Structures are given as structure tokens and as C-alpha cells.
Image (tube, rainbow, N blue to C red; front, side, top):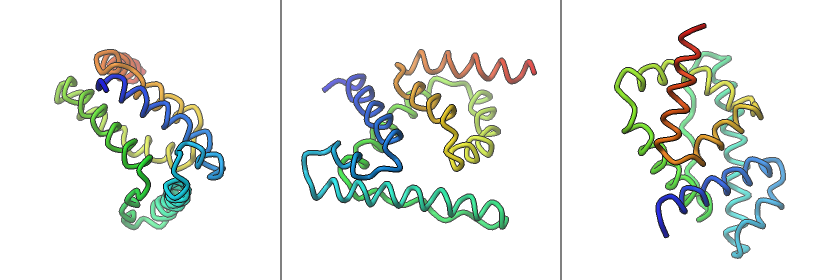
Length: 148
């Protein structure tokens, strides 16, 4: 399987998981293995609990807990594919561009914790792009932010 196909497949899985984040029964349909389906449901519950804990930690001004480790094959494969895709994108960005992205991390974290659907859609869209297109997309938005 090619890297691009794996990336696109992982992104489709991410989009599906995002759509079904509230409904683990539907999310379980992503796998043909019922045991892994239950593990996936557990992963989704753990991710939602983690988001809530991060939000609570931010309000209390204490360090956030570590993220849960995925136990389902679906989530582990998705995580690995996203890491590959993000690595391919980041290696094409200049150091100053990566620094600008790091400055946006706190805002991005809040938007993710709040389940901002527009932001989630942008992340899924970004991860579905070939890395070169994603880099161009990021640069355009960084330039737009800098112009404000």
C-alpha cells in the first residue's frame, strides 16, 4: 500500500471517527473484529475524557494529564499514519514556520478540546492533502494571520 493511499485511508478513518465520536456503536462498525471494535469504543471514550481533563487542567492552571494510549488496532494505525503525515509536512516547513505553528498550539488545543467542528474539519482536510499541498495551505494561513 502506498504512503499516499495509507494517508488518505487514515484521514477517512479520522473523519469517520470524528463524525462518530459521540456514538461508539457506530464507530465500532469501522472494524470487522468485534473485540477491536470494543477497544475502539474504549479509545473514543478515553479521548473524550482526556479532552475534558485537559480543559479542566487549563482552567485550574495545572499541567494536563498525559494522553491516553490507544488500545485498538484502528486507533493505533490511525495514530501511526497521522504521525507519518505530520512528519512529512513538518519536514517541509522552515524553522521559522514551525515556530509560528508552535505559537498557535495553545489556541489549537482549546479548539480541539471544545470539539470545534470547523477546526476539526480543517484538520481532517489538512491531513487528507499530499504533504506539499498541506505545506502550501499552512503557509497561506500563516501569512493571513500575520497580515491581521
